Image: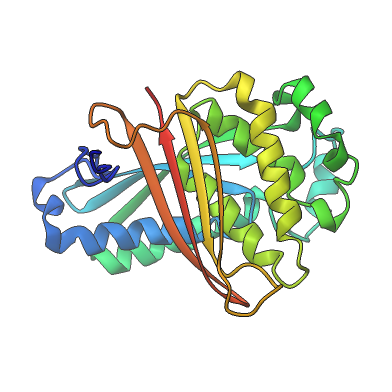
Length: 274
């Protein structure tokens, strides 16, 4: 039996930098990785996910093109007057205003970190509403949609939106890993990770009819259970085919490690597109 090939070691990858060749050297990888980390940290705690980033350098300026995915928790609201918006000074925790202010601060940090004279940010934002999810899928997860305004199921609305984008090949695997990571950690104290994993499995199973990718595989392994101390658990779920031993297939993989109250947890996600 042939050994399975590593999904990222033997397959060519497209770097997120397009510009001068000397920035592609290994010693400048730290600069590019820190720039990506600055942009990713701007989306923490919000419903914005980083889909793609392109970094280009021209003379003394850095041009950063960012593709964000904005998941709206609520549907389109009624039209409010401009005076009402101006008088309401309180900024919402998951709003675009918070992300824009963070990006403005990150641009100044990048300019100081790289030593350039100018930093240009170009943001492309993709908005996603609950109504864009097929109606049969929303009916199948009616158990969770009844409690959208309850903190117990605060992930249900924008979670199904993100899973729909991933299966339609409009979002990358890193967005899914970040969504799983923040929900596994936040539900650790309340011991509701079982409900979240059940919801994740039910949502992906309902959207399986509308998938435009060849396969998707998720693996969560570590100490995220509260029953026995020092016991690790493995949770796996797969949709479609995942031929890791075939080198001619396009497979993107994402690995993340997070820390919970019971120990460390590793997250792995694979996506086969052709």
